[in-house]
Length: 203
Image: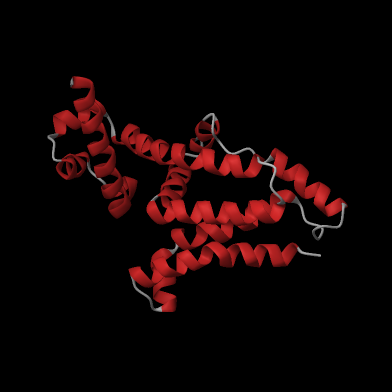
């Protein structure tokens, strides 16, 4: 019973922290605000997470642990490059639509703590693009796709998928849309990014 209660409280805390971090960022958030959002006192919050940094990393790791295995599986399955591009963009954009704070979390933490990425890489599910690189090289050699370095292709796919979520307020202002309109655009973007990338490398 206590174990279930502890797990429930911990989930409450992670969800509350996610909400506060998303609204105010890491530096602007306060532990008291997170405790209030979770409906617990500050002493209870410190019992589970003794610092804001530890809590921040727990929130990120919880989300990343859900996303990374999906992306790793796509990059290392036996599908074609075209299918990989479509599956990667669809999975990534779908996930970030549900966790829109994630890209900014990464950027904020990289700016604050460059060693953060090295810690991320230690996670067992961290995406490995070696098979993707070999596949791109073979497809280029066989004339299936235009000459391109796999690293550049991967950066292009990732950038086109990530940037709208990093620059959401700016994009909404430029194209004069609201939250609902932006969500609709991001749904469309699953296929738009894939089509753009595939058409750019087709022979």
